[in-house]
Image 1: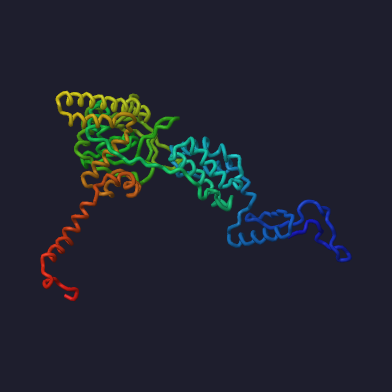
Image 2: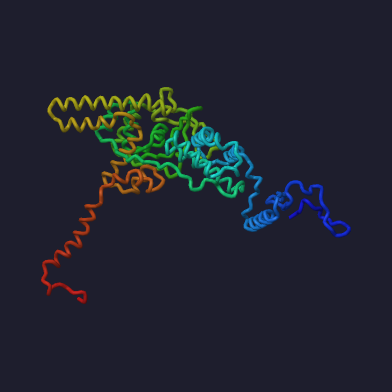
Amino acid sequence: MKDRWFNARKGPDGERVKSARHGKGDRWQVVYDDDEGRERGPTFARRVDAERFMTTVEADKLRGAYVDPDKGKKLLKIYVAEWQKGQVQHAPSTVSTVDSDLRNHVLPPFGDKAIGRIRRTAVQAWVTERSAVLAPTTLHRVYGLLATILKAAVVDEIIVRTPCVEINLPPITKTRVVPLPTLAVEAIIEAAPARWRSAFILGAGTGQREGEILGLTLDRVEFLARQGRVDRQAQTPNKGKPYIRPLKTEASERTIPYPDVVLNALSEHVRLFPPDLVELDVYTERAAGAKPKRVAVRLLYPGHDGTLIRRWRFIDNVWKPAVKRAEAALRERAAKERSAGRKDSADKIDAAADRLRGKVDFHELRHYYASLLISQGANVKVVQARLGHKNATETLDTYGHLWPDSDESTRVAVDTVLGAALGKIGTQSAQERPTALG
């Protein structure tokens, strides 16, 4: 520690000699080498403050917890650019989402701030402000992105600790899944264009996601083994050409046994609409920096141009019109039943038509498939495997309420054993009953 107001050398008479800085600025300076070997020299007005800082630095260096305060002066936007280069695990679609979230939500308020100057109160205020314009699920994702970046800054020893601590986020209210009734699913399939009917059956009969079906190729269907391999999906970005890529996680990859209704539909589809060879960009790696290969494939459900159909075009031109036609068909059928005096049947059909009013996603077919498995006694591990869920918890969180109530089965289990035993004892006289000592 240096006294900047006096020279290190004493005068001839042994007295301290005033320096040129005497009486100007901070008097005390702590000189030390940082973790990269560079000399540092912060100054302090009071000696006690300088000593306290010096003690803290030495202790942190011994514990391996020292972080150079100057590193925290780096602007968040500069660090984000460095951080993004290392995110090789992100799929192209995830990269696009991250770019959008950074550009629209994270960098505007924090990009020009020094990382070390971002406080917990500022993060909380930002979350509160964003909650007025973003849905809870979106806000959780955007906040998670900021928290991940600042956690990485801690690991990179840019800051000592992250300000993303004890941040209050709006709760996410999960909508309980209520599967479509079979009447509604049948009506949608019947209303589907001939070229797409088997795709609808595939959704309801295997639970495959929309992207998995749109990217399905003939080599993934094993007719003799009566099963299908699900390991990739169609990706249709807003900019650029559509392509095929692996599923988001390895847990999503699965082999699904095809029931006869699905096999028959696929066989008929291939007979009526033989898939032609088409060259597409196919990614075999999930990493963001991976390069696609140009591969010739036979798409089962191409668009009018023979290549991958964009999702929005499939939804707007195929799915939504089919749902509308299905509702109209059910209304007409209900009216005929009502005019014939069959009120209960008409009410049931009208109720199915009501479910098709408003927004109905293709994902409803996946929910329907899950409900079929559960209603037929499939356990949670089987449902998880068929749907490609990461773990059983995800399956239970989504469909747990669809499993039959176990109240009655537990009553029967107890009554069958314990009830029978106690009933037998009840018919015996006190003298006949066994005692604790036998």
